[in-house]
Image 1 (cartoon, one colour):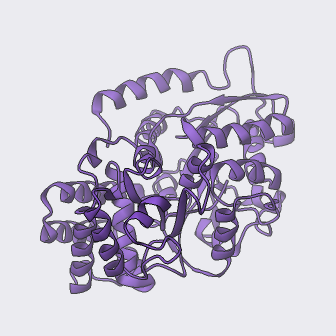
Image 2: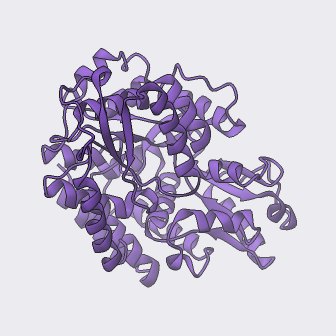
Length: 429
């Protein structure tokens, strides 16, 4: 999804980096036990900038304290939602040159790696560290594939959140504390904002448009209809899906015209912060950006579930794996130990804007948004995010993302619907 030359350069550069992982004069342990770990552990993420990098730094701080004999080697590749990083990683795995651990979204995204026999089963690691009793059952169920678990989640994110500029809403005569209850009401509010000369809805490049698309699908179709898109129970060719795609078309009509030129999510969120736009549909990593930039909830910005999705938690989770052939498996398990720990999750999520997957983590000094997300996750209906790899495997997401990006240009409702149906038929099992 990125410029081809940049991707090739990234692959080449990362190849050199990964080749040295755990090598040189810093020889790693090789027995696979975290407590005996030494050497260098190469960890691949897409947390390269801004609040995401700050969250990683906080996590590494705990890791360095937990395992002082292991050196953390940061193999991050920039690109929101991992769009570029996943391509780089795929090339390395295919070449038989894996990092010690890599970031992946929990859920269906892992299926491609599992099918390719690229991941170690971590079920015994879960048992040894008593993780199943510390993570919510809903989460453990979503991590389990044919009775095995292949990753350790570092957090839980929510993808169906609207972030709004309080002053912009007030100037348009909209009460920031009373968001619209459905898409029609939200579109009516956006008409009011458009009349003031402000961009109603900020969005960026491809994956952020896919996230907006999934939010509209969820709002239009409801939980069962949305889930049915991924398990075959909802017909992509149905009239209900046609209505949803037309609603997405209308949502796009309120967005910034330069959306495709914005390379990542942060510039779109910044439009809201600057008062150049009213709304941005974004995951709660946006909360970390608002906090890092000194914005105050209720004063500078507000948030609410995407209209029509109240009572639903659109779930994703960043998780970490142990690849087969990892240069330092003991170092990888040390990293995974910190990832799953209460202390590691508290440090990371406080900065990242997400909520801990580990229910024993301390959250007393988390933000009001995070506390509300913890409550909502415990009581809302949970669905899996499309844009962030929880709902479908990578190949399915890539094809559908291409179709959604094309729709952003041609606005061909029949074309997107037919393409989505064909893609579902291709990948559905």
